[in-house]
Length: 163
Ligand code: 4NP
Image (cartoon, rainbow, N blue to C red; front, side, top):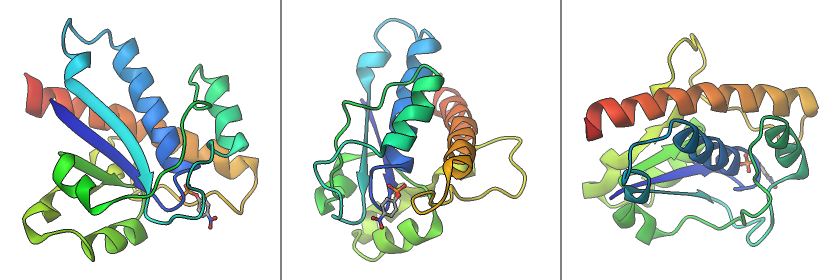
């Protein structure tokens, strides 16, 4: 079993989008029999502001346009247990990295990575910017960045861990 956790600040915009997009890509890739059951994905926020809430309706709206449903997801806050439970803990930005490294046990720090580290053909884009206080264009850009990051991570996962 490979467990992957996508992390942002509020868990209502970027990380639920990454969770939904990545799950959709796994399904679309028609991952060979048995593989899907061996991959568990979830998302969480470093902050508790929006715990229990559905993703931001702007994120839901854009994802829906691309055939991805986020509506059933609910925000939760990252816990210390997550560092033990997950194999990959993928941060949307550098601030998320700082928040997590501050509370992560030393022997699990290696699990924390910037999500965009795995993206290909994204020169200069190392973070997924926080779209919360911006406009719809910002949400569109975030979706596009997450789509590219997800493709790169999917490739990384299947090349390095499963094949
Ligand atoms: P997210 O976006 O981290 O991508 O979910 C945010 C959502 C809410 C807030 C900040 C960022 N907030 O400050 O409430």
